[in-house]
Length: 80
Image 1: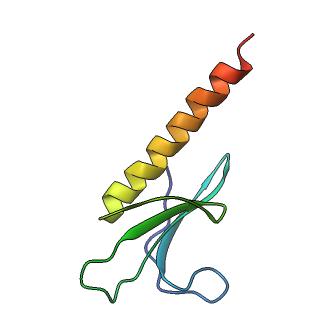
Image 2 (image 1 turned 30 degrees about the vertical axis):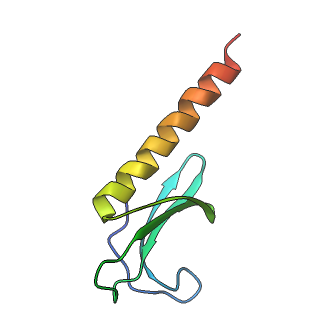
């Protein structure tokens, strides 16, 4: 997965620090409040919340795991 470098809050993109990755299913975004002592990392796909982790590395893994499950589900659905 090709993630952007971490970005500061950007008008029109995110109110929080964030990274993004374009996937075949849509835009995956991880956002966090960097001013917090222990920020949580929220993962979303096209602004639909997937889950939350305690580190950026774990959040990226959550996004990968989510796409993997969707892929498996779609493959089973499309089998003849």
